Image (cartoon, rainbow over the protein chains, first blue to last red):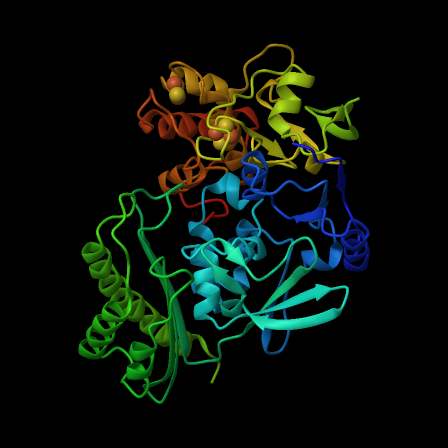
Length: 297
Length: 174
Ligand code: FES
Ligand code: FES
């Protein structure tokens, strides 16, 4: 390991200035739970590490009128335990609570979960279902992109962590009449990568589903959205078991899991997609009711 | 010449200054530089929990944490939870509940238990299992961990003369 300096900028501007100064030889580190392993395996050999978790503006978790903003330094534990997220965006709280172990969740960041670009990353799968966006800072300025568009392949993000910073994730707060849920199957309940994970977000009005987003991992090189199933759900009565089963079947047919010695056969995993999508839809639909009852008239 | 960076942090209540490799892991600094070998190195990939320490009160895998992340912060290792060679009530509970065999996982498990009991006076079985889910133990079979944490909760309750309460007391964790 030939890292020669560990820098701790206090502002985003300072971090960008440092990235610029080392011209590609410095790499950002947030929680570091993936990066420290990659450094050991020499996947990356930066000369300088720039730790962005001490940057105040990246520590923000806030609900503005329409959106939830998650700063780049926030950990899975912080997001999973936040009362507002648990009640308004349970799919994200549940996904964050599924990552790794308590020790990992205490330090690994949600933005890092996205930038590591693993197709089964629990938090990222939930964020794709939520249609979350990201803010990206570089010396050229600021741009925004959906989480979905950051993937370049398995474990490959379009984000170049030697030049740019994903500073925050922005989730449009699901309105009244919406519901969400996250489900996963893994060999055991902690420290195990999912065989299949599923995140579902539905919006409803007058007892009908007006929009559904489903994200599934790992059945492609990135979190996968079964668009046929999503379209089919529009207009379906909330909590119609037949329709949910039908949509789940479609999601299963649209997904193409592989045979995996670690995760199980393709057939088994396709079956799990159907089961988990149906269960997640039912759970999300149940939460729509809970939400309605809880709303002030 | 070795490159080095100055790391200042509080280790078990004492201010420490040490020169480290900028990307060195916290576990290596604690064991090799500061010679506290209670923190164990197992998988070194975040899978086993043997290297768990408390960083500002929260359990983390010190094999995945660059030591420089501790700069300006407080780290507690197993050596730091009790004074002058006495056992902490959690350690005593682990012995009494038969939750220690080879002992390799124990320092980490005790620290996770401490972090839980610092937040929740009387944790439920579910809370205990969740909090300890990041630890592998090849000996005890885990059941004894739950017994030990419950026993420790009772001991600590007596110790601090906290009023107990029902099993649902205390803030819940995910
Ligand atoms: S040695 Fe750190 S988790 Fe195993
Ligand atoms: S007591 Fe031996 S590994 Fe836990």
